[in-house]
Image (cartoon, rainbow, N blue to C red):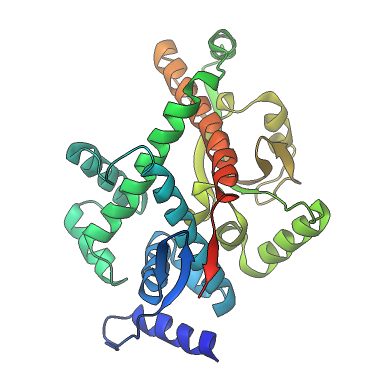
Length: 308
């Protein structure tokens, strides 16, 4: 009954015209950091602003996603504060991140974005706080693992040069990255994910199951040049029809499911140096994301999470 009433509050809270008084209780404790009812509601609103399809899930799934998301943020914050005195980044960089965020959801200005956020009972300062935490986490991961990033620049250059017909194949991809506990069986986990894909669609399955930062946006990777993808994964994608997805692929820190949303071939005048820069950046981010998942799972084991 408590959870049921809690979800009535959540669903009403999403609509500004239904102003209600919410009893703000402490729901969880992450080490000494508390998570309240309002924290979880705000997290749901944030996730819904990024991907409104989350609201099509049932209340138990919404609760789990919102809870796990805010717990993950608290764990990251605790780790960041071991190395930083406060959660803050340069104002110009923050403004750039805000702009990139609203462009991703097809908005043209900060004023449009403010109006959009207000529909989810969010203020710009709430959004800025969240992307600041994520930016600082990414900086932490980069500082710790940059020396372990392995990029074969010669191979990248060779692949681009060998594409003499100036045509490039682009894949529109989505992903789910997941891991399994020691007592879990991969097939059973994959069956659960496939069932959620069938019932709720790939986007919502990514929101439910993906441990990647792309999960909150439905696992969307967008259009990716085939040259950015390693040969093994490229072959698996080429064997897919549009709308299909791979079986789990082993990657550092977990398993990867890739869905082919669409593909196209474009004529392109190759700027060798520019293409090399793009591919190095893409492959570097791929590896850093894997290190991020591994590192997060490691520090999470030492965190005490209590339901109050």
